[in-house]
Length: 276
Image 1 (cartoon, rainbow, N blue to C red):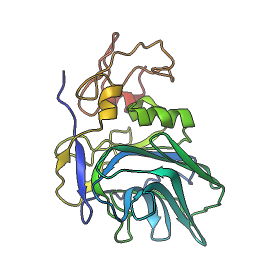
Image 2 (tube, rainbow, N blue to C red):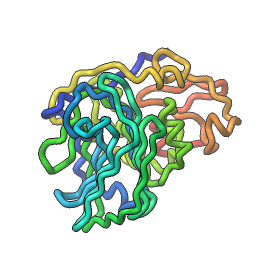
Image 3 (spheres, rainbow, N blue to C red):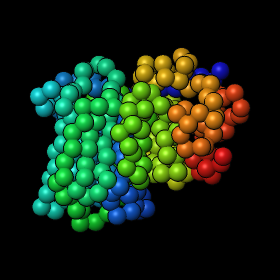
């Protein structure tokens, strides 16, 4: 059995991970989905989990809105002349792990989720002046403030609009690389001591941590779903469409393997080569 993984702790003031490359994460915008596990340590503030941005006027952010009544997850998007703030119908509890997800099917079809439910939707049209192509984790991007305070884990961006059922499975603890791996544009697992910025997708968009980051525990939901204290080993019937609906063999976390009754496949060969 491989060693267990960790989460990384953001201090609410100057810890963040940024990828500032020129390749557009989302090409021309939606469809895309963002998701992450988060555990906020603070009862206040608009805490950015992940932001896809280009400049100070064009961005799509997933936040723990601990400064809003009920502490919802907030999907905030901004383009010239339009600003959308969409809140889940229930909120987070300080010191507990929650799963957050936001989805844009088109420029006017948006949804946000906490723990796979409490869905809120909007048809407001948000049209960025340029494609948002940079990523900030734990911070909104070029603008100041809105730092996350607490633990983050398994941050993922898909260039696809995940279905409600897929988002629900992520919230149960399913590894993100088991859901439409061919559409993953970035997977910053934040689960490796010493390399919080590693992008485990086939694109290798490794982010640069801006400050020292301590490590923490991982969500109990992830451990339970995967049937193992480390949160990674699970016996999977490769023929079971519910266990692995896209017909691909299970992938492993960064640097390790996931065990099945049939085989083991490294994560990097899976997400980079999409081997079957």
